[in-house]
Image (cartoon, rainbow, N blue to C red; front, side):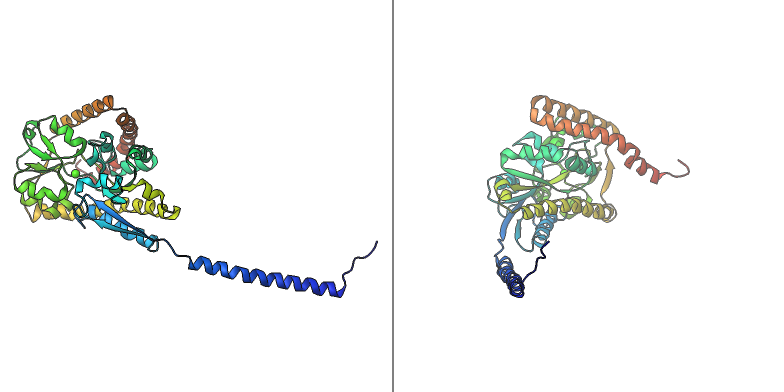
Length: 375
Ligand code: CA
């Protein structure tokens, strides 16, 4: 068998080729690396319109927190300027402004848009419905978000859950509510399905943006109002215009706030910036709830002990009747509106399961921690 050998010249030529190719590879890599580093990064400068007074505690600050977070997460590539209610468009034109592209984003509550589609109310809150924890579960792991996206698609909007206040208060009144008849004849600010329910017991239910509520109460445009809970209601000073502060917020057990994004604007973003919007929305969705959880307690204490607010619980009879009317209203709308029915049934099924489990978990624990030997 012939032994294969290489001449010294061949070995030198091969060594040179290897050295040259290594050198050439190195040289050709350098310009491309520098090219990537030098490519200009597109900066997106967006506008966000909101339903809240600029920098309003909780609600308004969630919008600001979103903008700060999105800018930091994107290294400055996504800059969002937040406008308070009335600064760019009036509070209740947020939906249209984002739908039409006047602003790329909006922060608001979907139940304000029931004039566009009644189904939208289900994505904020339903009287005697899901609490904050349950809303988050339904939206993110119970099919809710897919239904919400489908509902807003024809309006050219992409919705995201972006905040929750937790269970609210029933509202501010200048008369005691001992029976349903005491509600009759009141002109009250109460949006969403809660408004439809009380209108059946003789309340004239209206929706007024938060920033106009104090003056509306003071001047007698309305006789009663609900807003949020101690933290926000103290900020507006409702204790100066109403005597009784009622609980529980049967009509808003865990309202979700929304971040709406113009669909073309969202789709024009690279994938990482879309993910940043989704991630920042998810972060403020939880952060707002944490803010209310931390601050409602001290605010209630101040309202009652410093400002002398009369805290009252709605009587069981009143709550039972309001619950009965709520189920009647929901079934009626579902019978008339197939789109509403689809979302309502998804939520209703989730609610039934949540009630069963929360009876032996959250509810049992709340009871357990209050138990005393004498009980
Ligand atoms: Ca409210």
